[in-house]
Amino acid sequence: MQQWVNRVSMNPILCHDEELRSFIETDFAFIPATKPRKRSGSFIFSFSSEVKDDDMDLAQAKSTSHALEGHFIEISKNVQKLAKSRKGLAICNSEVGIKSHALGTVEKHPPLSNGLRRLGKTLQIISELQKSQAISEAAAIGDFFSYYAVNARIVKETLSNRLRIISEHENAVKETISKKRYMERLKSSTSIKTDKVDEALKDFKYAENYEQNLDARVKRVTKNLHSELQNYENNRTQDFIKSIKEYVNKQIMFEKQQLKELENLRPDINAITKRNVRTYTLGEEELSARAVAEKLSITFAK
Image 1 (spheres, rainbow, N blue to C red):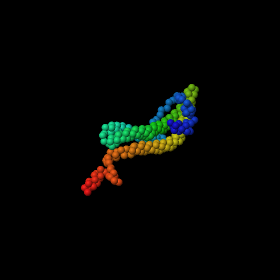
Image 2 (image 1 turned 180 degrees about the vertical axis):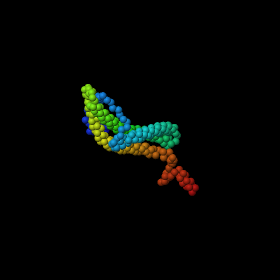
Image 3 (image 1 turned 120 degrees about the vertical axis):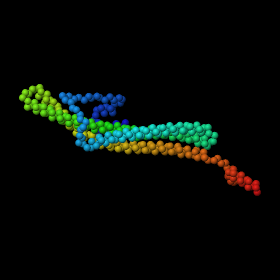
Image 4 (image 1 turned 180 degrees about the horizontal axis):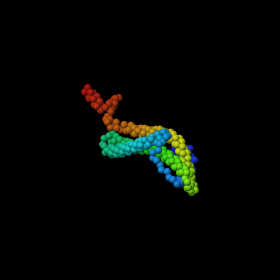
């Protein structure tokens, strides 16, 4: 959240926005001011979905954003499936651990009983680590790619909005030409009515001003988008590196913790297969029972 606020506040355009200042300075709730768009005039423009974009960089960015959105969504879904499977593995390990510990409590052989109880406790600890690992990878990678899938869609929609402005500008140019031709027909007419002339002149001036405003808007939006896309690419690269690095470090940490628990279990498992051999002291030697018996039999034989 802090990173988002920092990036929005550093934007050279948004930093002058009054609502952004109000959002940052408000201590409690923020209610945006609604500003309905007002449009006056005697004509309405229709938008064409087939607008040729002469800016190849922005056209390529729109196509790339569309492709990335699909890839990011697919990656996010796969990571969520991986996290879900890891949680299932954690549950299974926990169940095996509980049963192993219960079996160890009724086992009569001491080394085996201790080993089963220690195995059960270790599996339960590993189960908790795997649950935390699943949550971590879902947040570090799954949520990250889901977030950037939304970003890619917003980039695509923003670039599409630019095409709508271009379409509106093209329609405005056609409307201005139409109004101009209508005025020329009025000039060549034999009977000229003052009210019609005034209305035609008013519509022509409005259409001309609207066309000029849209032309300036298209140029301004295009210029700003080039700058914003560059910042977006830089931020995305930094976020990718940071997110992947964080994911790898946490995965290594969880795997090391699980390995440590298994290593601590090794002596108890090895103790199960060891034979409890008693030694006896005969003179200055420590011998097994069999060796003592052999020496005594040799002694008595002599």
